Image (cartoon, rainbow, N blue to C red; front, side):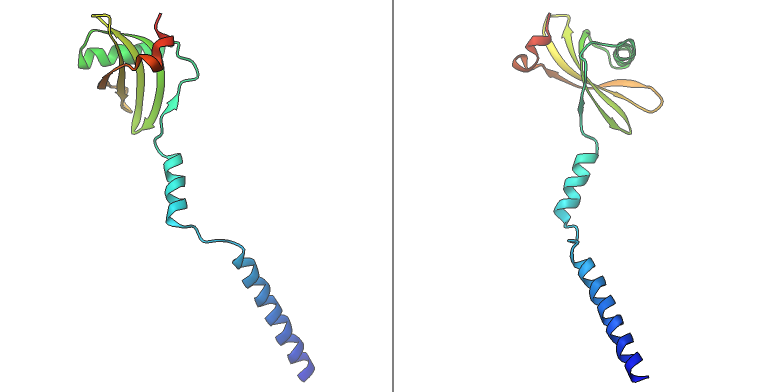
Length: 130
């Protein structure tokens, strides 16, 4: 009987040690690793695989012009960003032959509006201008 208790105690002790060793291999997540993961997953801009405008992208831009106004012609689709809807980035030519990077917000109901207009960086986008 005493022998059975000793063997049971030894087995229990070995089992607990194995569990503790297994837990010790994993490092707890730090705040920095959590922040890095969330930064990588949330709301980043995705460059367009092709800068050629699709009909859908042309329609989005046309809707935004109706709402926001302006004299711009889109010449390239640059990027998109999924938010509560989608942000779109276009390279556009204005009526006075200047180039702009224009951001358009498309909400979940497909309403579109221009949210940002910046003069285009010609060093960055010069190869897209025909």
